[in-house]
Image (cartoon, rainbow, N blue to C red; front, side, top):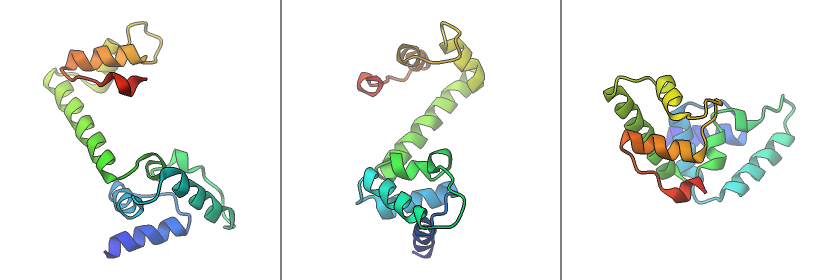
Length: 131
């Protein structure tokens, strides 16, 4: 409880540098508030502070404004772990996999590239996620 309260206090204090565990605790505390409301509240609080305004989208705090609750974050961590394990089983690093998946070699992955890459790894990607 102390850690959750401390993370919430830091949010109210407009701080933007959080450790992954602190982000999870903050998400748990804010999960009953919708994403837009969280962001607007933070921006309003920050506007009253006399300190350098760092865009929260460039910090670890950004997850609080784009992740509904800790379960979404957990799903992301599970998926990232599965992809890492699959790459490791093939003896590949993420950079190697990116090169293999990027068919047109433009340095960007299209939705189709991503879908094919996940299928190549043995994961099915929901087409609704790519829309």
